[in-house]
Length: 184
Image (cartoon, rainbow, N blue to C red; front, side, top):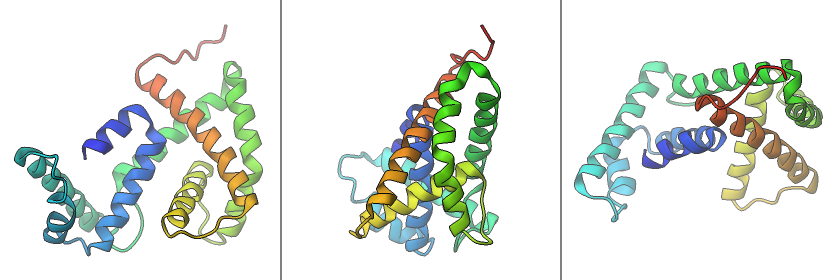
């Protein structure tokens, strides 16, 4: 929870990937707050009792949302879908504005990888940004499992990461009202 708040302020892309990981973690614990309390929250010896309670309440609220939204087995919470919606809105604004030609170039350098990801998705196609996040999350999961990642996949991941890092930078600037869309 503390990590999520910090990530959301600093890097929206890292925040979203972190939140997807939390969703999967909650699923791995069978949406059982007692198990999460025992194995995760109590394991944080650097937290005082009020911080542990705050963390417990955060996990409990996420579990409740997952149940209400029907994403106990798969899918993403609406709060995470809203991040994708916000990022897509910003993405479209950036692409339309000639002032952000560097962003457009980074996107078009990433587009062949996005097309390939979407082609592999079959009937489960997602929008361009969510496809990028799916790819990065998939790589994260492969790394956590200690699986080998091909050179081509690493190359794609590096390009997607550069693109999303630039989008995250602009998101932070936009969030702080520091992004100027006026043409010069």
